[in-house]
Length: 340
Image (cartoon, rainbow, N blue to C red; front, side):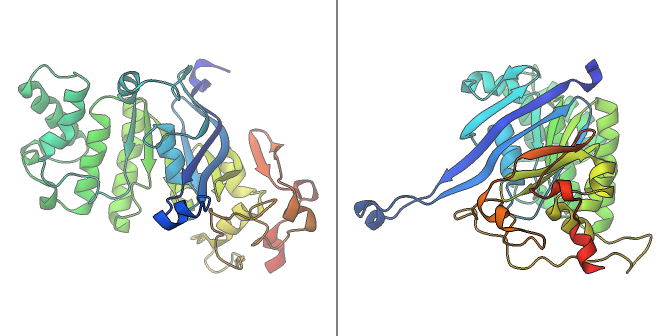
């Protein structure tokens, strides 16, 4: 493995379980709490300079995984290794130092910005927290540079969030993430709350910034077309489990897990509109408080067999760098053929 391909980030069996709250009556009656396993033993590497796209339905654990990596949510078990250092056991002071190198762009540009702070205060706060500016004049100088780089004007930095459009607010969020010159960015559905025309501008900006600043992205989205455009590799999650992982061309052109195949069938094909077979999954996403036994996808899978109901599948190699978690991988079965 060359230096450019060496992992910047490695996850080893990372899990996050939320402990459910109980009422006073439930505690007195000793009713056990209902736990929610949002992320279940996820392992993968992210190489320096690459974009790993993370996709799945709402509620599958994508955002929880991203925040657990940064320890915004503390992992329940497993390891997060960043640049060779296990950060899951770092104390708050050491983690604060590490966070200068690891940042996040949030999904909602309206909720993620404090309405009582001006742009220079919002974007300049990381500079003050990490001691990256000597005085207020240097803070303003650095903030002016970064907000111009993301497409805003320096004379706007004394304004407040309510004076900006949704796309402009997201640019402020990007500026705040980049002002401390991080190496790794978790992009938590950064364009899903924006108009389509603005989405394209933000996606292009993120691509430019990646090349210019040598960034590494974990890009979380439910839009497979965005993932296909931005990503070098793709990871697919279902109900907290990693079910498929591989190079973007391999996963999108030859999806092996039935869930990935169903996601691909739902994506519009602009080259041949109306030609793609659509796989309709039956039923709703099961509750993470009471997940199905065996393969968690078996309750909705068109090709499930009895073994799927009782035995948890392991993730297996299906090609160069391509892995999937399914009992029927060796049979080359595709749910897409069922609708032909």
